[in-house]
Length: 515
Image (tube, rainbow, N blue to C red; front, top):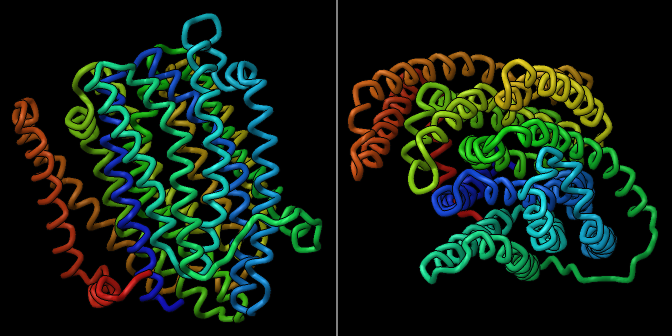
């Protein structure tokens, strides 16, 4: 995939992801305002984290890290890609069905393991109830992830990127309808989740058929390729599990503090916007690209793809990180402070958000560096690095919580994320120049940092001047939008004069037809 076409794919995924995250913001605003930080919201966050945790274990993270490179190479060589994908579908279906059955039976134990601090109060029983409702979501979203991986490997990014939009549309509609009719908003929220999973699966299944990728349920058979798929997927599953353990350690610590899970969740949703739109989107496009380059033995093209992906990602991520660090309170208060979400909640959430902002570039760099290993079907090295990161995160989260309370979770997450990046960079050097960023990247990254700091100073100064207007109902949204528009314009103007980004390449990609 040429750099311009790769950028086109990134823009396709990013556009749909941006729409999904905007709808996700609306969803989270409704959750914060209609349910609010407290027992119900804490229970929902803990319950919904269970299928999402195992989804990354079995599907989007682990399974696709093994499946996409193998499927990409079969497409490149013209071998039986659809037959391989059909067998993989059957194996994945059996695994998630067994998992779901066990989870439904042992849900109280799962809740105790992941939110021990809930035990003995009303949050525990509510989380068990919510967990049994939402857990079947993993069946549908895991199968949808396989179809999405096949579409991405074939260079078809739009449908897979659009699927999450359905989830947020359905959740927003369900909560709005429940509120308007006087029904229980929290129950409407949790009951809609599994049905949204069905809708996502139908969308990508249909898109794969239209793209000529005929994946159908098949009789499970143990073949050498399935054996290899599982051998590659197990370390990736363990690595993905380590990331989830980090989240669970944070949740365990936060469960001992009232409303802390809700605050961390809200901050997480804010920094996940740039992470999803930039980091995850680039990672989705980069993995099949690097896999094809390796199949073609194109080391120069692989290095070019990796460097341009990192350049694009950091040019967008670093300014976003600076914004989260310098104006967290205006962001949180304008977006969420209404209804059950109080000023106290805004202050606590803003503190967590500013800390997550420091880690945002690290979270994005992980998504860029991991495909270097996955494209070579090496999932063991990222597992080893993730284990180190996990132990560091646990020690810091538990140790610091004794002295500074629930915010230790955010600090531990950020420090362990940067350590993970350092390990990935060091480990990738054994692959030679294809895993090294090129001279153009190294010359531009310092300009990107300088421009980001400059615009950050402007953003902070402007926010101080506009502070009184953030308190005026009806005006604060307009003031926040104006502040960001001015900041974005300044950023791109300075980038243009310093030649930080190649505008002609970006323009060409925007006008290129995407799938």
